[in-house]
Image 1 (tube, rainbow, N blue to C red):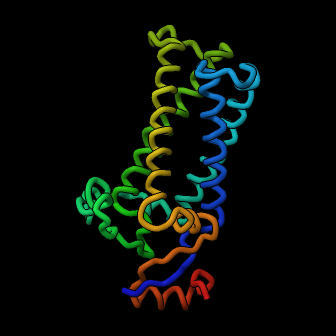
Image 2: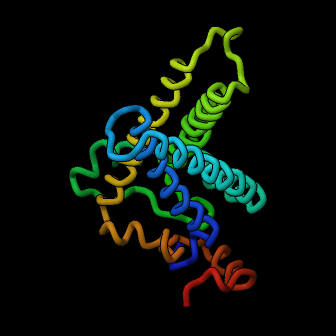
Length: 219
């Protein structure tokens, strides 16, 4: 294995990441206003902005899911038991002792085992909870959905939506914190701006890229 600088994050992936970030922060800002946490903006404005930001984010997620499965990038989000304990130990203990990260990005696995598991849980549990509860709340508010027969009310839907939102806030805090560890903050963020990062390649992978995808390798 040898280390090379290659394009890890494709253009759509970077647009998806930053677009998702902008939408989520907008949703959190307006959502907590709707919840009554603060009163910096008008309630009606918060509801309108929140609704449109949610619609735009849902559309972005639809395109992202299509892109993940048509390009095969979904494989990077499959968790694996290999080196999982080492990575978990590093984040729980080794990181505070100045130890080197036990995982190195490869061409086929750009996320470490703990990252892959976390992203998978966020995408399959927390995000769906936000989607379903948010859409249900909107439909009930417009009188397009009657939950009386299911013994569910707006309070329960709002509770699920709020819990999911808090979970996303905790994920963001952890995500930003980890960006400040190890290498410099800029060093962690730069790959999601330029697309390029250092990755370990086998001789076969390097030969394949040089032959079939030479534009991926940074000259």
